[in-house]
Image (cartoon, rainbow, N blue to C red; front, side, top):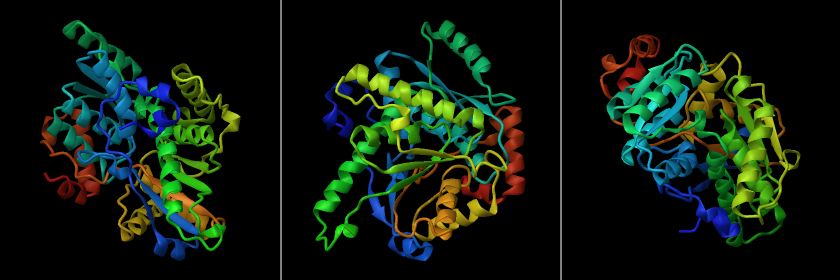
Length: 376
């Protein structure tokens, strides 16, 4: 099936695609929660359902990134993230499914209730894990890449943290056009009394880790003339998700798309309806706060599964804005980027490298439910 992006800009169809995503994902109304929070209208884009094996926003990016790996006949992939990185786990899930060997370079993060289960899932998948001391995993990645190239005769595909580069971001340019098309179809079925009855979102709230999802959405919306504002809630350190990073990523994404199809608009960063919110990162990456715990619980009451590192912070920001009265007359989309699929079968954490083994033990001590939730 032709993607919404390729339907508008046929040159984009030349990009290799792994075919791992099940699209489009649904758009659902959360009417009761909108009334409770004082939001004019609240929709949720269910990107937790991007694929049955493991969903979330990483799948759309990996569709193109792993498509490139297969087209270039790579035998392994290497990527980066924090200990509990959903991106690293999604990469391992789909690399294994496609016959590629997954390697992940993992950086420390605060103890939390979800990361231990992620690491146990890596064991079950047979992911080769490479823990490092800080956020810069590039030296270890280069070392691993050289060793694999010598072993296999070809370098592994190096996938950046979060799957975020111009190629990965195209997955969310496509997603933006997808949701525009969905809302147009939904509006066609509305027997409208006045304009307020139509679905015409004013703002999208989305977690911003490495900015690929948020910038992809903003570029895609601008390309088709939609005026919905993308509010990206930064959950990673500023060096990972600074505005300078957003500017460069937007420029490279547009340049890649224009190289594929010159009818794609020459959108500049200043043309984007994009806001990077800096006020929800503290007290640090992955640190569980009362606001994120409340947000996860509140979403759960509406049947939406979130976590405390990414989606919980983005949802908490939306809730705070609503309670401040700024969304009373707004139509809002919350973009759910967390996988709601069951976790992959866990392995024994005792086989992890020592640093990861100690981390899992501390997670189990502080959050005992994390052990039972993992299936171990």
